[in-house]
Amino acid sequence: MAKYAIKRIASSFMTLALVICVVFLLLRQMPIEGYFNNFDKLTPSQIRFGLENLGLNSPIHIQLARFFKNTLKGDLGVSNKYRVNYPITKLIAQKTPVSLLFGLSALAFAVLVGLPLGILMAKSAATLKGPKIADKAGSAFVTIIQSVPQAVYHLFIQIYGTELVNRFTRLPLLYSADNPKTWILPIISLSLANMAMYAMWMRRYMVDESNKDYALLARAKGVSPSRISSKHVFRNAFVPLAQYIPTSLILTLMGSLYVESRYSIPGMGGLLVDAIKRQDNTLVQALVLVFTAVSILGVLVGDLAMAFIDPRIKLSNGGVR
Image 1 (cartoon, rainbow, N blue to C red):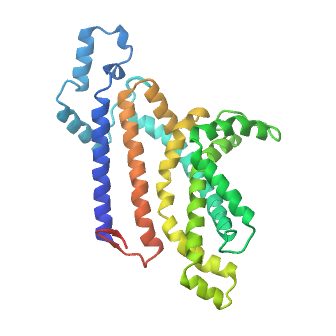
Image 2 (image 1 turned 45 degrees about the vertical axis):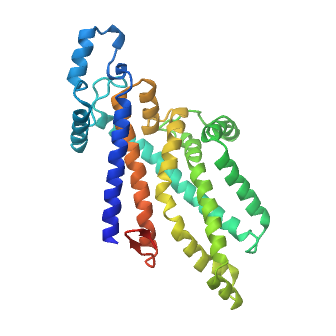
Image 3 (image 1 turned 180 degrees about the horizontal axis):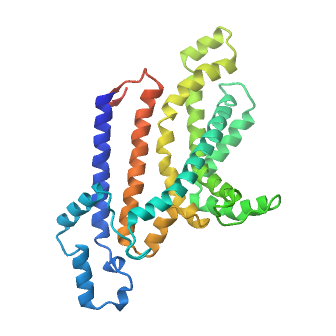
């Protein structure tokens, strides 16, 4: 276990380093306007001096080595346009708590709704007892969420969800830190993709487990279907599903890029969108690094989670067996 964990951590760092190199090289192909404020008003000599001061006239491998060195020190540079000469680490420190609040709340809501929905769908499937309408309705929900682009149903929720809620209570359209009611629609929007994924995989794994020999033997011995489902089938079905919960951070991050902008939430997702719009290359580079690190961490935690949940799973150099 320890050997595998060390190998996976090292592999994750290598992946992160590779992504940083690719993003760094791509951003170096962008117009230099992204490194200056009021670029149109600068003279050629001022531009040359500014590039020299930023170290952008050095060979690319020296620039990359300098970036890695500064990153390890916790220095991600300063913003050039979003907030001129303001340290990016301070910007991220200000925005991260807001994104964490919405991201973790959305994940928790997705788990609380998605897993029971998957269980209900599995129970209503042909192999288990229960009304089949639940499986059909749940499958329709999963299909819609997975087939419709996120931007479409996010916009649909913002427009019609606000009108629906306002019939019962006044709900402002944009986010307000002092009004928890304004958190409801963004959290629902962020949770839908993960909710559908949890429901789909929980249904699949529970149906598969219910057809295995131990479940068939228990039914033959007269054990009630509800006891088989809760004590055996669910526990065994949850083990492979556990790896998807940390990796669902990726879907949450993807959704936050759009949702935070739509609801004017001052988080990391909205910050990245603003940085791209303003062509703040240094800030974009730092934010891509942060988002990539979080995504890789989620995948790593997901790989290791199964071994902690089920001791029967052994991790070898080749992976899970």
